[in-house]
Length: 466
Image (cartoon, rainbow, N blue to C red; front, side, top):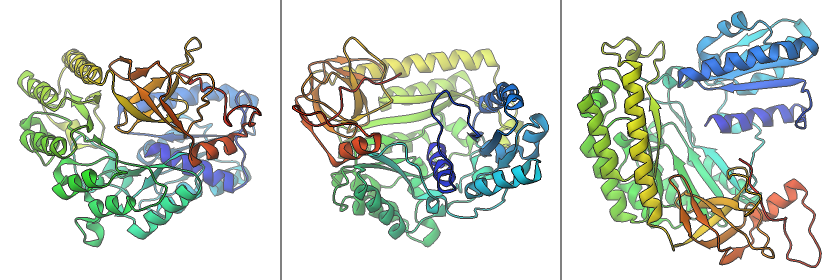
């Protein structure tokens, strides 16, 4: 969601006449869009601002802006700690950035503007999308949950839902521009529709997405187990372009810890959802988020988390050490777990997740997968010149396009899996089939790729960067 906000910031600046500089050039404006979920984001921001101070002293006309969740939280503290910052803006007024930059230039003093409520639904802002073939679409912003470890509701505000017609209009526009994949975004997509009184609005939205001609892949993130209902599972299973993939945060497998986190579900409900998803969609790849070291977590609590990981057989997991965030109820809870204990549990959890994901990936050896070729995700491999892309279940696949079948980002290839690692699959035999798409055409047009004569139209073999 932060990445999508960054696209909106870039679009807003572009709409105001700004132009992106080439790599290596000194820009006139640098914008930091920040996160505040974890403590290390704060350290990274101030570290980066410190590195920029001498750059700005050499280029006094350069402006630095800081926005997003950390700006919403710290407000005037950013300018106090880094007085060379020109603009600070929050999560509710992304569209104000060009005006604030201009005001800072004219007044020659820092401008701090933090709104307490959403000014304009962000999706109405101009957007400079990173990808012509895959796009994010916000269906809601904000969150009505009160998880004790999470600072997001206080920074993003209460949940606001977009009307289905607005969402579908944006999706149809994206498809007309060449996109063939969209990811529906919300802090809790399963509660979508509560604001306008329709508790089955999300499953209905998934089904209607299935009727959009030219839209080949639909994903969504993130659902909340509390609100995950069977009508959503049915919509996933019965709508062909909704991908067999689910990212559903667990956070902890211990009922006691879940109570302390104020997560309104328990282990058995979570595993029940997993079972029903797998019954309806046997090839679904399920991923999750897990926190270790929450205040009061015992070794037995941690063992319950490991139990759920073994039962759920996750294709992957984002694992986190608990991060104490000032202003959240959990920050003042007794039983803060010592750092060395948290680190030990984190390493054991990560090892188990990797072992299971590797085992699950090895089950796909020899399987044929449909992969949407992408750019920028894979590792650079000059010897095998592997391209990269995402399978329907969102697994990352490195594949070797053969010399004459030129594959562009946005094209769809069928590959046979020849190797597996914990975090990706390998298909080294070359594509079994290459389907050139409108999305590949859109990528080619955006990047100004010359079409070679005498061979199949397209770009040179993709060599992904790290």
